Image (tube, rainbow, N blue to C red; front, side, top):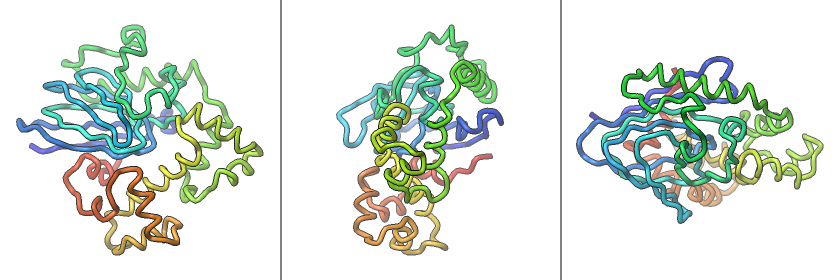
Length: 275
């Protein structure tokens, strides 16, 4: 069997917090080398793996050891790893909610896979540590109950949510930090402080990441964008070389190389649809 991915929608009351839940599974005997690309979201996941493996982060000296258990992951570059049989059940969470749910700042877990039991008491959080007898819907339900309970105790600041939503809405990747500050009536310094505190990246870096992810959505649309230069134009670039340079800083590959690659987890994630 090959790598399989399935997305499901979160409960309605969590739809502004969780992009989707997903199950990623690999059941072949042979070890598999793979990579993930940054999505601008936090992964809160439980993994069952036959053996421990390492995750390396491009542009960072960090190396994470991953074994069975709960983890948080937040990346702004390519994460590379080689794994054996495994099953991952995860929530893709918008980063502005990380501190409210897990009492940790996004920048503190940037470019790491961080064990959740190093941060919180799983028993007090009512997260099951023995999941062998739980079905995927049952474990997703327990994870949703945990997230919902935490958010009831820690509501999000309205201005933080407004700023974040302004950037991630359609075509907001063309915003400048100055325009964002003017729109909110804040100084650029105040906007930057909010982002560093609640998103873990500077607003400029996050806008660039949003643009990168929008580009990824178009990479495989050969009918609408047969030429990569068409994507560059759609993204607001006047210089194709500038588009390639910005693209490579997040994944270490050119748009042409990403378009040609069809077997990675990164490809599955950009092609999969939310049920």
